[in-house]
Image (cartoon, rainbow, N blue to C red; front, side, top):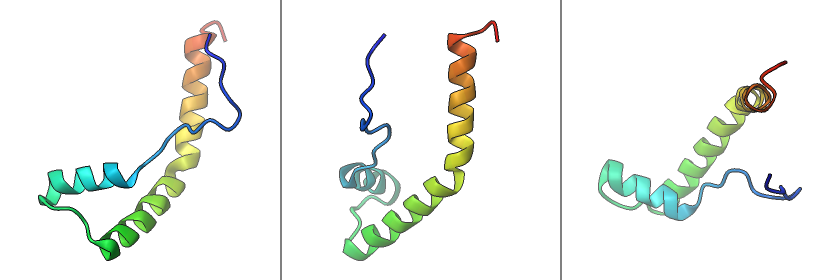
Length: 69
């Protein structure tokens, strides 16, 4: 089994990824104001559902790795 580092980043959204998605959706890159607003909205969206995501991930990991419980 792979050793996991305590400070390992588990999920990362880069500006490059955001701009890639913008090009797919609106056929252009976002300007600085757009990026600032999108960043805040992404942060809020991820924080709002993070407890659900964590609980689901933990429970599924336990089910997969210890199916007898």
